[in-house]
Image (cartoon, rainbow, N blue to C red; front, top):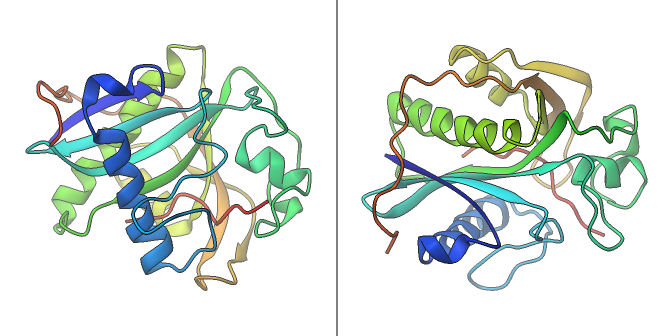
Length: 217
């Protein structure tokens, strides 16, 4: 497994990796979970896939098998900020405004979204390795810009998985049940500190677990 991180400005350096990641998201969030989010027959892409976002993907033999998106809580793009802040402001109909409990816009806090892993990553050891590489890539990106904390809206099972890997993930606020997939979600937060010994970086071009609930304007 190899890790790549990028923004829209330099995604061209990694071939079709970004588009492949959007396809992986569509197969999981739309086809499997049934979320009502923007998509076509191939990919899922929303308002937060903009120049303020960064990405951490994991490749295996040149194929994207997992990834996630990250954005500063001070980010703005048009009428949007980041997902949880827009939810607090009532802009997203599928996420309750009380889920975060406060309006956060701090340089030291970044939001992670759209975490996904391919079904081909089957064993516990493989999924743990893939998750660690995704998260450490997110940490690398965010700490380079001064972040000290990360947060996300996720299933509670992700909190357990992160803790097993050594991250200090904790639940913030009360969970709620998503009407579209029947799963319980809550805001999680953790220190932006890497747990890796070594994560190989991709040396070639590329030929499940939801991190947040659906976001629809």
